[in-house]
Image 1 (cartoon, rainbow, N blue to C red):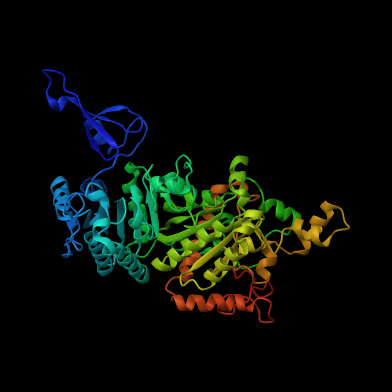
Image 2 (image 1 turned 60 degrees about the horizontal axis):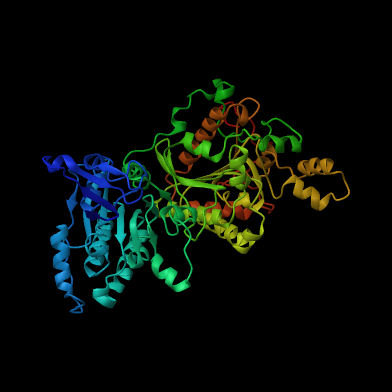
Length: 605
């Protein structure tokens, strides 16, 4: 029997049979015996239970990179044995044994290569070499890989597999945590995307440095990741750990990784991320507005302008009818919009602080070829999903997840698109304990100063500060049947209409709040109204999604080419004007007033 990481290979040779016919692999998880060539074709993933066996750095690079694209990075010399360390055998002898057994000179292999033609730098660790421990050699190579990514301005991928820092190198091994961490910080400052792939195991000094600092963190199923190992934790706290503790799935549930990706899906996932985070900026994105008909005055009812500026155009309704339409259960959800509008959409999870709120859907993708960071309140579709997503009412972790992805957008220069559809932020004990007000306030401040274009669309119910936390934008659009208000009609009625029947009070509040799209446009709260098909978005979701996609594309076209400083100045001026005698409007000072903006015949009101 030969142990290969966590997979046990067994060679059984009946008399008279050639060895090549009798090589089998026993899965360390389920005990299933698998024919070795089949196991190799499955990328060393058990076909019965899905357990991912450890693989070598060369195998990993061959699986991820385009064939023939790999170039090894040169390694600078490092101190081979800084302490002259000896335990049962001299440290130098251990290094020689590891090199002879693996064919490597250190526990990491650093290369340049491509994934589906997109260039990147990769630092892939190999657990076979002294448990993938972080010493001077590993620290130097990972840092040099980051510097190569900085020099060539291409993303960096780190693939981790480590038991921690290398004891035989003492404090110098500890210093590699700073060395590699500051290298990742330099890539942040330069706006170069970083990605981590956490594999089993990733612990100690590696987990607490370059493994957990990247913009996007993927993990293989079942990978164990943490600072202290489970044995140390159990001995310290004298308590048995819960099932699945420190697993990739545990990390995803607690908002610490973006996605758990099976090995066979890793290469496509990387390609999607690279298309968004490292786009080809030499070619202009396809614009939805570029294909609009030249003679807009002849456009039919379904081809009217994507975001009109005439508040008199939407149908007049009483307030409570508008609220019910905005809350209709069959209106498209944020996930419907993301999947239908965006190419290469990759959902990203977690606030990196211990939570992942399902009421906020976040990720990256491309809108008509243009990379965007996407965020939206997601109410869910059926009853079970609506309960799981808390009806779109985000917790502090949801707003912190949104803030994390907005910072990624700012770093990489990618526009932000947000969809607003929530009754408000989650009201509850846990939300207050975790700083709901702080999370909302921080998100609002962040959006106000974000140096990339932001387009927000109120697609259903825009309720209170929970909605505003995704609504601080350069262009704020609203669907014709959506609403946006400081409080729900029910909340307003409960506070101010105490002496009236509940239904009457709610209807009166809905009228008094002036929360319909036409009212919001007249007051400059929104910049344009997106038409809805038929009786509303719920009657034809695909058409509604297409109208929103076109409106967002046109808004992004309008904002394209503006400097970060200009965007921030205009955005701040916009919100500075609210409540003053100066007419509200966009950064040009153009007011939103139905008496001024009438239908001009060119299709734009």
